[in-house]
Image (cartoon, rainbow, N blue to C red; front, side, top):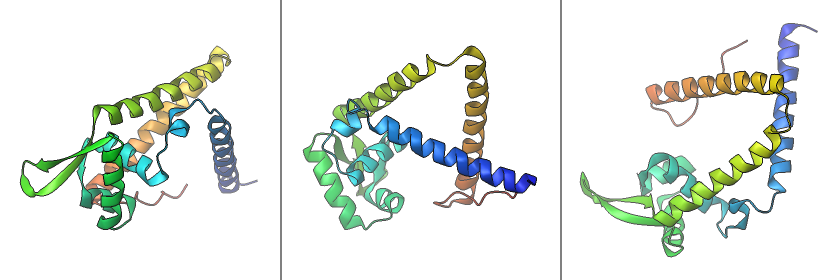
Length: 166
């Protein structure tokens, strides 16, 4: 098998493994995201706001790939749930910014905490050498992901740049 074929096969296998791990994690009904009554789009907005801090309706529409009218309805429901709030943009009074309320921030914290607890249960069963390898690999994954996002930010695009050939 040549290097390119092996690389493609490994990438496919890692992708399948990640999907399988995701399915196993999703079986944990104690996860706050599964206990919430949020739709997928509402959850996406909550996650975006957690990442961005605040966003205009236009920002959210662009990130979600939906119309401003759709975002308005999603945000209205999040406001009714007490998870988000709207405020005037201090730099442009015509723009309304959306941000998480303390309850919205608490939901994000519960989601992260639950994920970490579940991950800890798995990691506790691994031997020290496997943990060292996993630390090395996840550190490198984070570095490459950060590099891709930095490139995306420099290009001003909404999409990650294409992968470099092997």
